[in-house]
Length: 154
Image 1 (cartoon, rainbow, N blue to C red):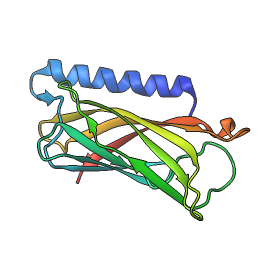
Image 2 (image 1 turned 135 degrees about the vertical axis):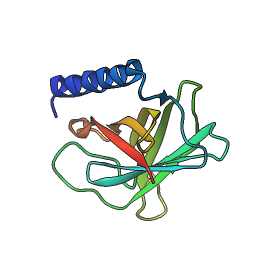
Image 3 (image 1 turned 180 degrees about the vertical axis):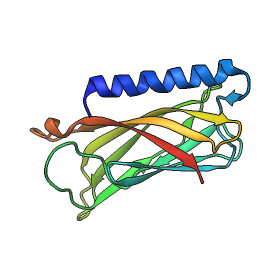
Image 4 (image 1 turned 90 degrees about the horizontal axis):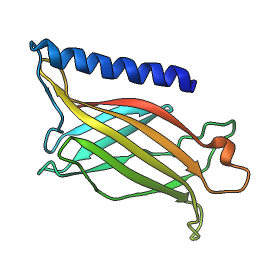
């Protein structure tokens, strides 16, 4: 997806939210549902966002670091920690990936997940986000990239 197309989609999303909030018929809350799990798809993989019972933190899981180049990948070990959710419903966290082969787990990629929680009256709560992959190995920078996604409360 080109940057212009992503920008146009982001602008459309913002305008939709603005129209919905100013219409008065529908209310929007910028917060997560406490204890909920949100699920979506990033680069053909399921991404999950698990909100803590108190609604103050969330843990993000993505089985593989999305590579935006040709080629495959081997088994990966994922490492992530719970991240704080702001009062305005935003979340930023990083997931580290290392090789799961043998006992030497060298990091090879980091994925940054950023987004916002929304609750629209009359529809399922969502987490609207972006993942950005950064690969460590020399020559692998061509695999860096980002993709937008929407995760819906299960």
